[in-house]
Image (cartoon, rainbow, N blue to C red):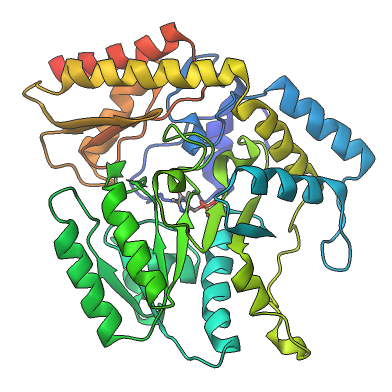
Length: 424
Ligand SMILES: *Cc1c(COP(=O)(O)O)cnc(C)c1O
């Protein structure tokens, strides 16, 4: 160890970063401090966290209310395993989540990150059919969906540009396009054909907004029809609200835009306000009931060591205090309105192919093709970082998904950086 070297130099010796080709990638930036919507590097430069650190830190970094709740919890009960034991933070969190989740949801299963929430949801759906004496072996998922990087979640993900080495090992999945206003009937037809030709167990989908695909939106009315068709055929509908959950789309959950209710809902990311890795897989009572039996083996034998970590539950509870507080609601609607105005401002720009917003999610597709992890994408990233703004373009999509606590002037700084790019 040589503490006289910078963090970046020491990083290079021993660390292996995610989503990185180490042969060619520029070194990462060492971040030493975060507060509100800002992060600081080891040289003292500040950056506006325009995507809320992958849409987790929605109440701002180092939020005092959340820190206090976690600190108090840590002093009271730091951790205990969740098999054979239970604790107040998990119980209270289940009650408060079920108060705001769609009304059919009745059970909360705890995991420790987004991928494992999806993994648990898929296994629940497969075992649900198995316990009822049915062998169903096919998943349905959207093209270009993203659900995580563990095997089940990776199988459901259609964004598989780098999944080549694993393709022979994935679950069986049939893919459908997302329904757009003018393609609903076509997509329903494709779904009907898949349902007729396969033994479908579950439909896994990101409701209304496909995040990793580049903040692509689809029709709520269309999605509603797909859910109804699936449910008529006994297919378990799994809503991946890991990105959309906790107010991003304007409502607490994107599922609230639907009439049909998902059978299973997965939450993580903003669940703990970016403070702790935790996730939940909630389900409707009929799923839970299919696991009740005198036979032990019909139970759900799936666990993670850190399931329902009390400190994570405390962070989530404190986050729920803030989600619909007057101050945060006011900021959520201010950001949503500012986004709408900005979309109007740029939509006719010759370099803009599409601009759209929903709630606090803003996306601008540039009228050029950019590969996901290529050189042009890195140049875009650097363009914004040089202006003190952290945005991570997804291909040709520049998106903004700021912490709710971002100030108007910080938000304008992001917009101005995008305008400068369009003029450059
Ligand atoms: C981030 C994300 C995941 C995966 O969560 P991890 O915690 O990174 O495993 C799954 N689905 C969606 C929609 C996500 O945004």
